Image (cartoon, rainbow, N blue to C red; front, side, top):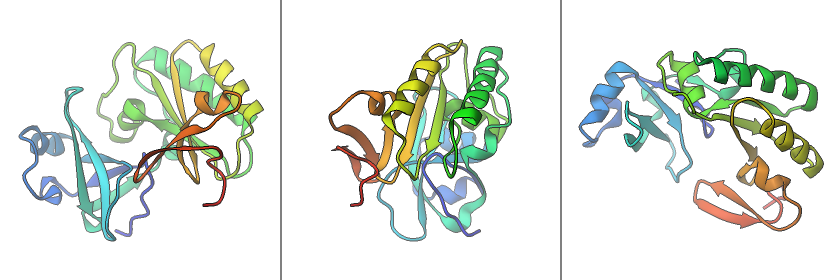
Length: 204
């Protein structure tokens, strides 16, 4: 399929053969049980997508490049925001987040769950535990004013479960709480590694 993959999108794969090379021993079994990967930030040539494969244990993470033709389905975080995790605390927290962001965001600013919650909602395979954070992505092609960032960070901090929110900006991924701080550069995660930027929305 034609793939327009962005960081944190979930990709369904055609099978372990799509990975090529010699992956760790646990990877083929993991792909057989749950043939999904998550798009990660890394340099990649045309026709290949950098993804991460999750295993059943927290230490089981494998980075690999897969060809576009090995992808059978793509699920962005935005498609998952109407679903709810199995664990009650995460479900309650995500419901509260949905109400909050519906009131606060506008225009082309979109959001969705990522991390373990996003993986669980896309694949149907349990990936969260009691105490898991709710990881969120807010896509912000236009500047998210610091006043709004401060307000969101404060409201998230008051929710029943812990929320870890990342802003997807033209300059890379930036932590919401970091952007909410007054003044100074912020760390932007890019395909070529982290870098300090004063304004992640500035034109390169």
